[in-house]
Length: 180
Image 1 (cartoon, rainbow, N blue to C red):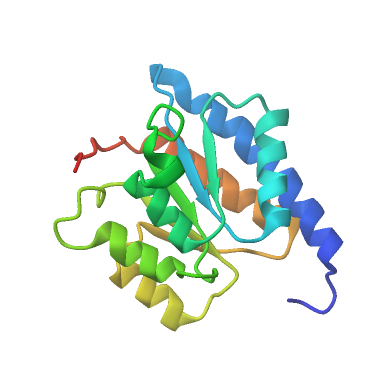
Image 2 (cartoon, rainbow, N blue to C red):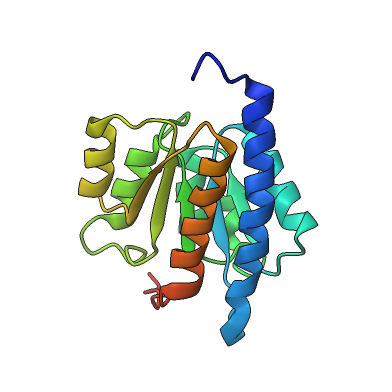
């Protein structure tokens, strides 16, 4: 983290960018399609801010949240409490961190995007604090559709979420999912 920026400034910047991101995501219903977004994030502060932003922006697209890689795989597999697909529908977009407990984002990528996997068409956008070329390259090699580095400045965070929203929410056609 940059020594000139404190955690509360970053949290505030992330919150305001999330509000703007969420208000833009709400516009993705232009074709009448509501789709679930799965957020895979272990930082409780970031989860709180994203949820609050969705609520404040009156987003119609459901946001499901899991806090580690193992829980992401359980959700996507429909295991345990995630067996009810009415309550926990398959997402059409996954936004995921890389460094998480239990299973990393890399392991989740490998599980989702592996050869012949029925969920491999789900777009996965990595949003990580790591800009290490080894991490970036590995994520793409495992099938990530995009890799974004979490910025430290408010305007950069805002731009990041605008970019994700515009591209994945408005411009990209959503793939049909194969059911296992």
